[in-house]
Amino acid sequence: MYGTIRSRWLVRTLLFAALVLLPGRAGAQMNFAGVWVPLFSEDVDERIPGPAVGDYLGLPITDAARMRADTWDASLLTLPEHQCIPHPSAYGFRGIGNLRIWNVVDDQTQKLIAINTQIQWMEQKRRIWMDGRPHPPAWAAHTWQGFSAGRWEGETLVVTTTHLKAGWIRRNGLPLSDMATMEDRFIRHGDLLTHVSIVSDPFYLTEPLVKTNGFRKSLTAQVLPYPCESVDEVVREAGSVPHHLPGQNPFLHEFADRFHLPFGATRGGAETADPNYLRQLADSPASPGRDLHRGGHAHS
Image 1 (tube, rainbow, N blue to C red):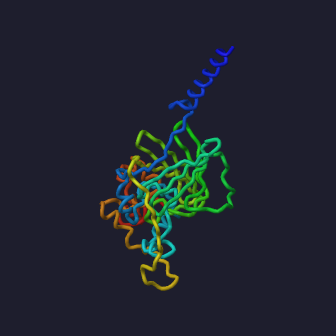
Image 2 (cartoon, rainbow, N blue to C red):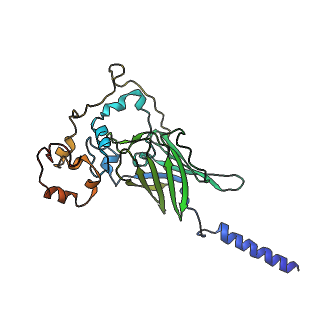
Image 3 (cartoon, one colour):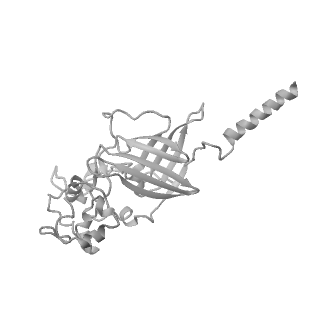
């Protein structure tokens, strides 16, 4: 009798170990915790020194987005109220600064409640809820990081983000509205992390914008504090907001001229991401009032 009870106890213990304790079990969740250093081999010119004014090439923007960017002036960032704005989560992973990821678990059940991320630049802090809670109603407050809810697809973390403040998709004035949403995916291969963002915006994008970013895990890197203090950097008339009137931005042609590109191509639109776009551009003669190098853009 005693031997039978002991055998049953041993079998149950082994089953528990196989289902819960052993690595590689079915349904296992990937652990992303740690400090990750960004890799800039992709789009380095855009992500480090910053994109050129007027460079909208390959982006599926609307006419409204193009107009907003055409009237944008980089001096806007010298205004005290703009100096400490963090990157919104729809752009932050393309910026600079180390990334820290850590888990929030329930002390009693040890179930995963949330995954926190923090990017060093401007201390971008984001919480990804993993406990199944619903997104807030449409009238709830919008923030720079938005409301994020995650789920697992195998070992891939899939996150849906809503309630974002109006932000940007590129640091040259291309905007993002407060109706934008994002799905991002975190995929780990050893010490490498791939982040994929899929941003949708009914006002400023004609189709979802997909970007990828790479990170490498580090055992020594740190995420340092980033205190920010706004100051008056430029003396200007009170209430003045730097901008360009429509058609008056003198810098829009610089990118096209520097790289000898047709000006129409730099104006963006989903078609400019098509590998056949350059061939189509070469085969289509410029119509009256449509100069592909010095005038207007290739689409209305």
